[in-house]
Amino acid sequence: MNSRPEPNETPRSGSSVGAPEGEGQGAGSVGGHEESWFRVLRVAGCRTAVTVVTSLLCMPLAALACGWSPSVIVSGSMEPSLSRGDVIAVRQVKATEVGGGAVIAFNDPSHGGQLTAHRAIKRWHGDSYETKGDANPKPDAGLVTPDRLKGVVAAVVPFVGATWLWLQGGQWAHLAIAVLLYTIALRGCLEGALAPGHVTARLRRR
Image (cartoon, rainbow, N blue to C red; front, side, top):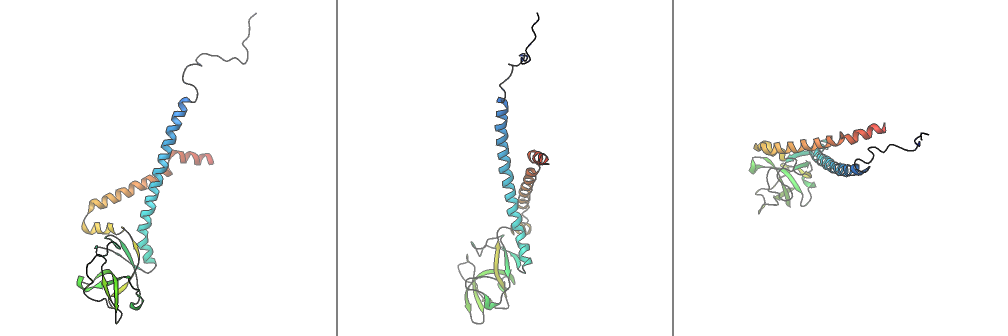
């Protein structure tokens, strides 16, 4: 009599060839996890950088919306309180409202009427103020009279005005590097949003 194969028996040909099941997949999954963590950190860093830079760039516009006047610091006479490239927001006040030690903005006749921001160190009769740059060894020559006072420095946005200084000084290399870095950060944000894993996850949710 011919014996029939048992229903539970399966052919054994070729079943012993190759690595055990799951061994190759394990190595691939480890590499995938490392790549995914690297992608997460990279995208998070790019988004943080873009958010911070964009927020700083928008702050002078917010100052204008509040009725304040933004100006760029072009000298180091107020270091370390104010540095070259910082943007200050000047709020108009009366001469009688200037507090002691406040940084005030005024038209400086010794510099052709240029707007200057120095600290008020002493108040004289007639609501005039003696001023001095924090980095200068001596006070300014003349007093700031009420007609020359433009206001007090109400806010400072660091580094935003550096691009304006680069344009004025023809430092195109610095400007190009800044634009390139910002573009790379933007690309990193878009890369995270368009990653294959994100697309697959969205499709599965639908």
